[in-house]
Image (cartoon, rainbow, N blue to C red; front, side, top):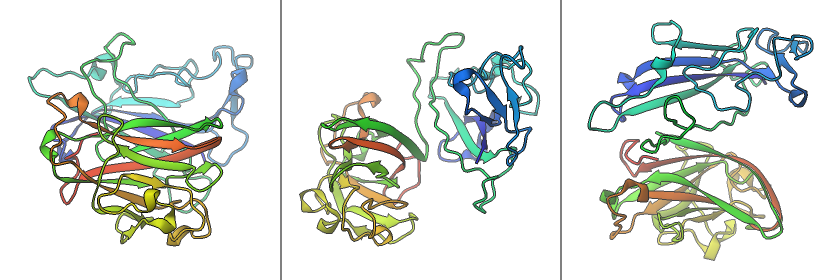
Amino acid sequence: MYSATSYSLFSVGDTFNDAGDQLISQTMVYPIDARDWQTGQWYDVYNGGGTNSTFKKYTSTANPPVSGMPSIWHNWVNICAPPTLTMDPGLITAKAFGGGPTNQSDCVLTNNSNSTAYYRLRVDTLDYNGSDPARDGLSAHAQAHKGYAVELTVPGTSNTCSTCEIGALNDLTIYTPISTPAGGGSFMVPLMSIPPEYAGENIDVDVFDPGDVNCTGNGCNTISIFEPDETTLAPLGPDGATWLGPSLDDQPTAIGTSDCAPSGDDGPGGKAVVVTQCDPNQVTNNTASKNLYNGTWVQFQIAVPPLYNPGTDPSYWYWYLSYTLTGAANASDTITATAGFDGSPLHLVNG
């Protein structure tokens, strides 16, 4: 269940077609077993093998040049030019285009034109040894849960770049390791940027596998879409809110009162709010479970208002995904969200 992770950085000429992307660097990070990280001890999985329990142990006592955890552990790292670790057994390798080592100058993202410059970071989860994972369910193959954050900084400093933006091209995964007190709680994340030109159009927002929470009662967890003012619930289009099954190609089924839909219905003209906890329910995949959409896609068809006019500043074009828990609850939910202009290619909605 140990996984290596590959981080590939590209310069992008056309955001609609990645065939012309130019590789800048590719960094491979092999896994460690960090079970004893509190005492500064870790185990080399890569050189020990994916099924070998006697991994080489590194401690500041047994290996004096190795002081505590690797320098990339729970730290911000320049993924194009990562720091090296004394006596590193080969856990981190960074290569520039052509196969040579990277240097700091390779890793400075620049824009020498009057138009926006785009770069793409591709992240791949691989087997512990860096090979493509097989789909056989065996523990030797990649099944790890990897969470990470991304930021852009001014070269040579830790200051974030005020003129840069980070967004997802196709989909965005959100991890929700949160606990709420008796009064409940919620958080919002910017989901997609919709320019004014899309006034009166329909936008499809698809969310996969929401609702992995421990809470009491129907309706104790909801996901919602909000307009840029962060207070107005997004209106639903002609298709309303539907569930699809484990594939986006599955036929949609309307979400209604039997699925604890707020106000009785998530149909056309309703509001973009979906309850993830309901027992009993009519979701075929999960009728025996309170978690309606476990392993299932939920689709919101958002109707952008005809008079939608957020202004000319793109920072005010963002629509938000809200995740709400009522009452004391624990969530360890990983959800994936995609957004696209109904019936048109991807990337038309940036976010």
